[in-house]
Image (cartoon, one colour):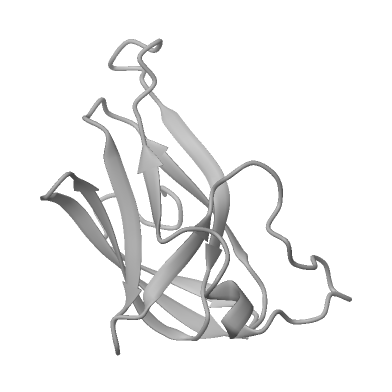
Length: 131
């Protein structure tokens, strides 16, 4: 299992509580050029936002936290995560990862893409189920 995906799979299910952020690890196991991860809601193309910068997103955490309005989740973080391979780790043991948050704003299907410049490296469909 890799980041919620079975080996070779291109779809996964995420159980999500509306008004919260979802912790996600993006991992690179094989060496590759720099790439960017971005996402879109399948139903209307709405951009998926990410928080992969230092510190926690400016939202409440835990069971007593107030749900964050979608309008806030749509305005923080970034629309893409840039990813560089770690040049200090030699293949085939190269594993590079970033830990951050995906800022889903609704349940439904979301398409996540990895690109190196204009070249599409891969896609995945995330089915977000509200709990």
